[in-house]
Image 1: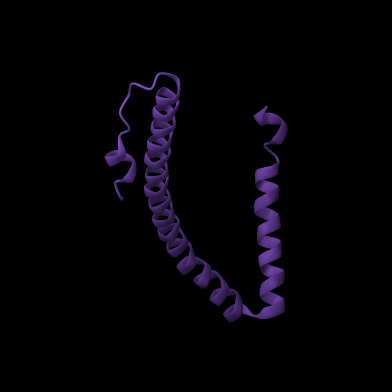
Image 2: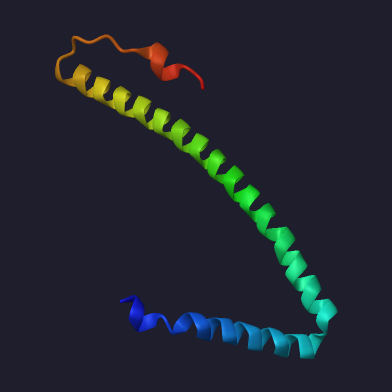
Length: 98
């Protein structure tokens, strides 16, 4: 399959060079250099923020999983109490604050 699309790579490089030269003629080399340098500075910042966001989301996901597990356990206990009436209610684990 690669041989069907391998002409796209040189074409993409050529189009990128052509667009860059046209942009340089329109705006000037200072503006193009400023735009490229700002992109170079923003990409590591974006990467850092994405990792931090993923870490926070992972912690939130584990907290929500624990809460869901506790709620499921409480509902199963209520169902057990409803059907048999022999199990004591575990109030301490349900009312325990996080």
